[in-house]
Image 1 (cartoon, each protein chain N blue to C red):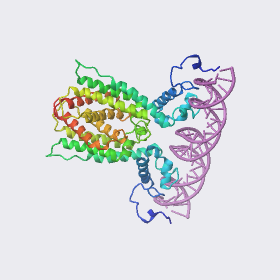
Image 2 (image 1 turned 180 degrees about the vertical axis):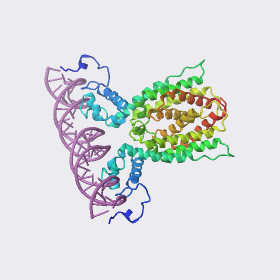
Image 3 (image 1 turned 135 degrees about the horizontal axis):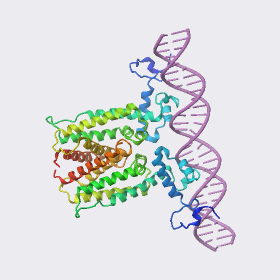
Length: 215
Length: 215
DNA sequence: AAGCAATCTTGACACTGTCTATATTGAGCG
DNA sequence: CGCTCAATATAGACAGTGTCAAGATTGCTT
């Protein structure tokens, strides 16, 4: 007889549930994100992580080969969350894309990056991308997210009158704008969080005009 | 009699030359940047730094109170370099600002961020800005740089016809675009460096149209 | 020549990631 | 039921890190 509470509740339906601890992999991912959020990158260590979860220092290494791999796991979850945002179509007035819809989309993106700052930093940080050690699953999840973004931009362009704008290029540049705003806010360079809405609207207007005004 | 080569050459004209080693503070800053560039953030440690310069592990602590303070010093130098770029006025056709001038400016900015990636990452990274431990001199240097950028944008606007665009807001959003492009390239998310010019031109055109087309 | 502050050094401590055993456990099969 | 085995957890160890404290050296100033 074990004194683990999980023994009383049938949770075997979860496929990859670890044996001993009960749900270690899941808890590692959550605790890692919590530490990143509350104490920053320097506050996350494998040892503290393990201690906070009541396991030995090397226990997490049975679920993630590396600290790097753990961070990849966290980022992967971030991309999954981002896709929900990027895939949700903005409201459409009378079946046609409007500037208001673009505004909404921009705000959603920036809001996501702020509310999930600890994920966003990993998802688009040099720590992972320059390491040449990206998990395959992370790479594909990230690719899907960018694909979904391009899909969105294509919707904006359906009603566009400026035929001089290349779809991919515009997607890249507009994404750069969103990413730049997000990073400046997340990294604490723009501390004036109240300016978020104004900046978002300015960006959205810029996008919309770029697409709908003949060059 | 000392065997230091500096003893044979009069370098006392340099104001803050350290006593024993000859030029330690300067060399620390350079070696730090070199390590960051060649081995990434994880490749820079105070101890390795000292060892590479042939001094003891704690010698650098007499020139920088912290590792953080050292990084602030590196970033500060980066801002000084950036100001050269941002202050250099783009060519002007017939005394009036042109789209080509904006293109040039955009390219200069992005090129700077790529060629000085190790500085740029520190200058605009969370590592420093979220630490609440910014050096006063760094803070003022960064402020000056942003002020110079706004100055540039004002030049763009001198000939603008779209009076609906607020100067500060536009400066923030356009800077977000440049920063976003730079980070995506630096952090290794956009690996296609050949796309830099195309993206820069697309961004410049977007800026220009935003300012010169009536809303 | 003396004193003093700036500079450099060694020693120490707590902390990190992670490798190498070793131990425990739960699941599957006879 | 009982055995086996792989999955999971553990303790020990090692090199590396930032940085504090105490002492040694140096060169400028008086």
